[in-house]
Image (cartoon, rainbow, N blue to C red; front, side):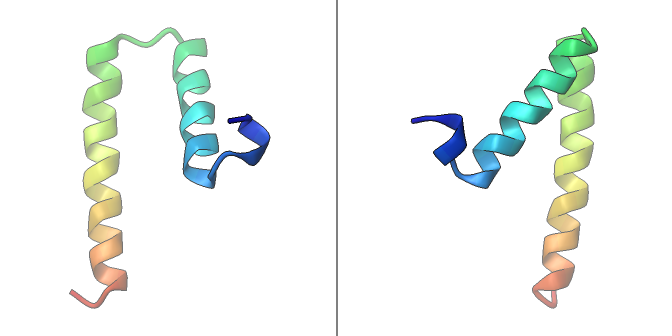
Length: 51
């Protein structure tokens, strides 16, 4: 699969990985930050769904 034809979530994931790797961040820092981001977006999704 080419990145050009990849689903948007794959394209976003590739962009995020590139950004994180470019900044040479420690894996544990990245994972902690991603957990915060995931929690925030799960809350936003729940709000959109009227929960």
